[in-house]
Length: 463
Ligand SMILES: *Cc1c(COP(=O)(O)O)cnc(C)c1O
Image (cartoon, rainbow, N blue to C red; front, side, top):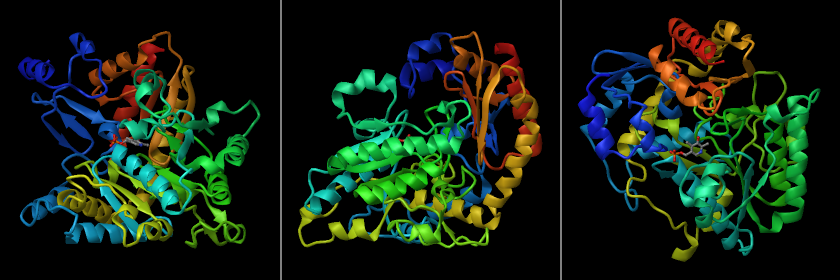
């Protein structure tokens, strides 16, 4: 292992996130000295293909020249200014461009630095909206089973992870969960869509009984990331939007992981299309005409859209909560207390906004959404041996996300696969026996082969 001194200094001084530090008595840290494209490299030149985009944040590769140039330019102009009482070009331009790209109706951008803070903001904003509206009893939230919305205390209250509930349950207000439309849970013979609709019925039953206390329903559209890349049919989103409108409950779309092109469209909500005729019945449905299919279709618009992770291309912490005029207007008044009471020191940081603008520039210049469709098709072809492996179950794909379960006798499969992956020049980070790929979009055909060949060898060694 290179540079044992750096590893020891790290273990002595750095408390690593989401880590039982004692594990590192036997599991070495991986020191990274530089990155380029999909590759991370240590001081001795050992390279690892970053198959998880460094916790799902990187879109266009490490040390992307275009994002680097934008940041260098911004560094010479303005590194930071507080956003209360001040404004600057990067935050204004970013807000305008996000508004133009997002599902219709989301014209107001509130910024923070990380995903969990975006969740906190959406929850507070929703409950405060109902309070300003004279309905203070609407202060509960619901989320899907196996949901993940971040790890601060408010976000944990809508996160359904057993390990967190055990450790921190006493600190957190418990909110109800409704069944996840994860298609792996469907009965045999039941389609993903039928199962999604059955789960939507359960949502309806819950809303019918409890809507007077519920401020908002928060969900991860199409893919529940931390649940092990649980994928579900967009019919669920469509029904969820209609039901939330019907019962007067906000819909919060947490696209922190799935936004920015990850599911094959810029935002996952776009895939829950509603025909214009039926859309008329549902007030909050977007009126974006989609011209592709010949008939008028619209994606669903949530009341709150949360973005982070990929928004800066994986460069700097930035998150944004986008919301509607209706929400914004409920806070617009003479009294300070009716305003939204929330701030972070680095809200709207100019460097982070410039990285986000450079990221949007790349989407536009390279027609990334279309290019990814071709890449995903190629990836699926190359993945045939893995998909067909007798010990691989539930191989699935949405956009630029792939996942499957491995039938394995090893209870510590995730750690073993991580270590073996490193030996094959791969950064894999399985969750339990679920292996997933969320590669940077710049991955080439050769790099896909390297990733898939190495993973097949890891699976073969551990199945
Ligand atoms: C990562 C993630 C969060 C939390 O974001 P952080 O920046 O890690 O706080 C919230 N929701 C989803 C869906 C995520 O994937």
